Structure formats: structure tokens, C-alpha cells
Image (tube, rainbow, N blue to C red; front, side):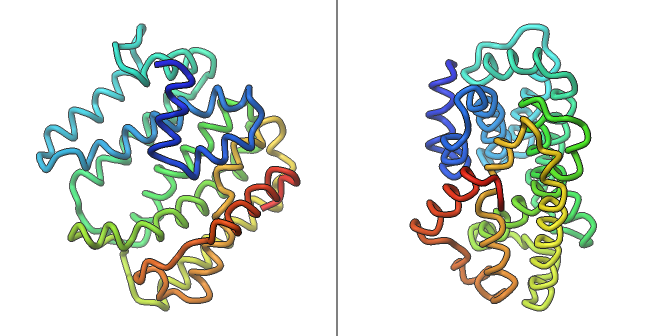
Length: 253
């Protein structure tokens, strides 16, 4: 799969992240598209079949890709494999993201708030740090990138709650509005940590663009937690464009 085809895959399956890449320099896009295409593949794997074994096999395929000497004949594996060879530690990070998606296969509800926090950490914070590392991030920026990734992951997950509920799942450890306000506040705290340490982003700053909607969405959830269950946690197209342009121009979020 060429980079252009990877871009098309992300554009169709993850339009918000694709929009973020368009605000990044071309050389950054070439590294972000394979990672985001890979993330799409593993995020979808648990849902392609009602048979857990098939989903497990799909995730194992990607774990094998991460350690293979040569990429298999798969449309995403080629560009991803090339990127892995350029970035020390990237394969290990992406393997953690794959492993975290096994929870989606089991469909088990979160037993504790700590389990939920860890899920957001592994599926979102680790993914954003992996993207930053691929862009040459300094290790000093890990805390900030992970904090930003956690906030963005929480915002995205809260938007997905109605769809997950419609599948018959219990996506939240505690769906009470008071608990959701506390959770949204935790996301905003992570965002504050990232803001305070934004200077550590360095040349990997374009990776942060993927979190461009986190602040506005978390503020909505904090102000009115019932929007989560109602499925009205969203930005207008005008607000979305404005937020992305502002972050792209200023680096602020």
C-alpha cells in the first residue's frame, strides 16, 4: 500500500485524524498516515466478527507484523514496516496498543475506574506518544504527549458511548452524570499538564494536532454530562475547522 493509499484509508475511516494530518507538514504526514492506518485496523479487528477467535487472530496478525523481518502482503503492513525500521522503540509501543484492544473482544465492562484509565492510556496516550516518537520526539516530551493523548482519547471515547451502548455494552464504569463530570475534569487536568509542558513537543509537535477537539469536547462534557448519553457531544463544522486552524497556526490547544 502506498502512502497515498494509506492516506485514503485514514480519510475514509478516521476523518478527524486525517484532517489533523492535513494541517501537518508533508514530511510528518508520511509518518503519521501508516500509524493511523494501523490503528484503524486494530481498532476494527474486535468488531469484525462475533467469534472471539477470529478477532484474536486479526490482532495477532498485527503483533506479528510488528516483529517480522519482512512485511506480509498487506496494504498497510508495507509502509508501517518501513516506518518501524526508522524509529527505535516504535514497535514496542504499538504492540501495547494492540494488546489493549483485546479488551474489546471480551466485551467485558470495566470493573474499576483504574481499568478504564488504563484502557484510555494504552489505546490513546500510547498511540499519540508513538506518533510523536516517529516524528523525532525527545524523551523529555513523553509526559506531555501522553497527557494530551489521554485527554484526546477520553474525549473520543465519550463521543462513542451511545454507539457502544447500542451494541449492548456497558462502556462506562460509572455512567452517573456526577461521575462523568469528574471524569471529564480528569481529562481537562491531563490537558492542563500537556499545556504546561508544550515546550517539550519540539519537532514532533505536528503529532499533537490529532488532539485538536479534546479541549472543546471535554468542556462540553464537564458543563453538561448528560450530553454523553444523549450523543450530543460534538462540535459544529465551523467550530471544528476553527479549532484545527487555531492549533495548526499557534500550536495551542
